[in-house]
Image (cartoon, rainbow, N blue to C red; front, side):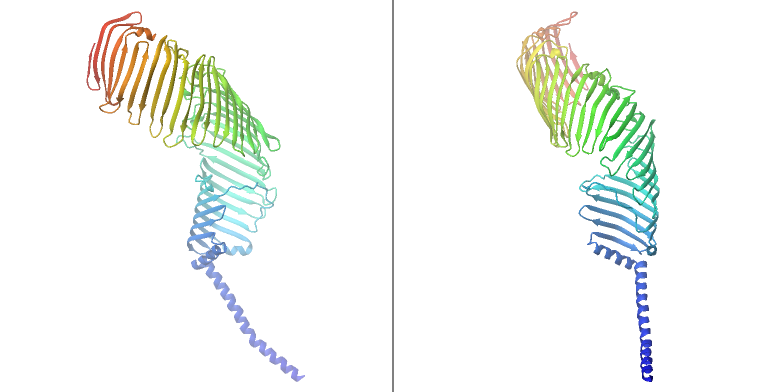
Length: 618
């Protein structure tokens, strides 16, 4: 029994000797962990270590530059993230937060400031689906966020899809709701203010109140305005109200949106009154428009209804107006196609344009069938000649290539043309202008190269000028060519040849060429004979020392049928430049009759007309 007690005492003494070493070791380990945590949390070296580990764990897809501060209050000059379908850059990030709160499942951020965010992402090919839950593992409190600018791009594009500047807000999130409070941001079209709440569980109850103030467009003198937006409901179905005013125009409307349905917009009712487009952009026409839109999803996935636009102030285009009294259409919209059925443009002077337009979204192809009914060009623009034009216009194509066929008529006058437009050119495949037996046919092209070069070839057949303008009857047969370029300045060459033709019952023949270039220089070589009367030009005008000589030898002016009789012989010399021209005249006539009451005999004219001196002898 004594022997057993002795062994027990010896073992107890050994345990007592070991226990201090174990406690010392555990205490030392705790001190090391605490010191390491303090080092990581409070030193710049610790912050750099943590972010370096984060970069390595991400496979270097996340990178940091110019790291300063500590874990509690840090600044990062630039942060980059790159993956196959996303590139993200964050500049000038400053964060002040309380990392110790993470141990109580709270993320508390005192202030988050970012200079700029730039994101390039690939478009998603997957349809959007309603999430199962929006609950977060932490309670979040973000007291202040301030972001200088946000730009979102589609990968491969240089123009941003979304631009936001000077964004400030507060964020709170718990098990009951997510809240964005005191939102302020500058958008391209105005200043946004508002607040929003979103539930964490399906169907995700939603409430948003926002306003857009100081609305503006690209026009410097555009008026200010205001739009208010109210959203209620949930993410499965959002009910919205919108109202606004700007420059005398006022509008209001309601809509229903289903973001995750086949047709995201389920209904739209919109009314706008007293809208003058010119107040928003000076180049737009002046009008007094009222717009009424009523669209509903009567069939699943298809939005249909009506759009009516009325103009109380129709005016011609040359008076900076809009010569339309009413526009009506019945849109039918799906995610695959947009159609405008029963399209009507009611013009002034009882004219109208009707038709049907369709655009297939997936294939990016479209068609348009337009009917023109009794359109008077002079009612559209008073500088044009009165007419009653009717006919058909058909357009087809996609983004890269468009085709057009135009068939119009005004009494005996008709126009038939077909053309193709591509990224490289406009090709006029057929042009046919007819009036009775008179025809003008041709084809040409305009290239979209740097020079914008063009070429046209035309043919006149049995063409009677008297059907278009006041002139004696004629029967002209000719070929015409026109070629040149439009950029950086207009240059071109016009050529013609006339044969087997008559004017005022006199034979007509001739040919000629006229060129003009960027130096404002004209070269002419024209020979034309009508009956026994001859008209010739030879030479150039536009550069100092140039001479353009015009010779007229007309022994029988009565043959021209212009109400002039007698004879005329003249030589006109146009010299030098447009800025400092000189005109030399030598002319004579044995007998010249102008109308019924004016007659001249043995007329001689000699003159020298210049900018600084003029001599004229008659």
